[in-house]
Length: 126
Image (cartoon, rainbow, N blue to C red; front, side, top):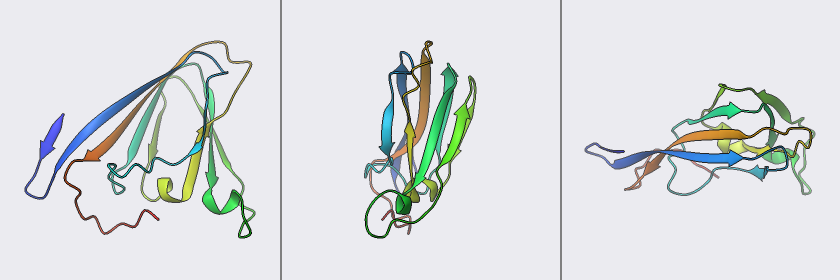
């Protein structure tokens, strides 16, 4: 669905991912595609099997500047909504780790704002 204002044109997208069981996973990442509006929250709806979800601060990952920041672990239950506001996605990586005991599928619906004509938000994504 496209929306247009005087400043820009943008698209609200829903990405659908099906995880067959606990072996299906996604590693640590940030949603940093240049088409994403960094000022807009990312909403994620979970359906099906409950799964663990982990946030790890970028400064706690690797390298000489590694800091002792504990990861944040959540359980995403059926019907849950996770909302990542700015600057979460700038400083925190997120993942859905392998959970071998999970035998049921999970569907994730992720809503994002895609900017067609890159609008200046004044936000640095680093």
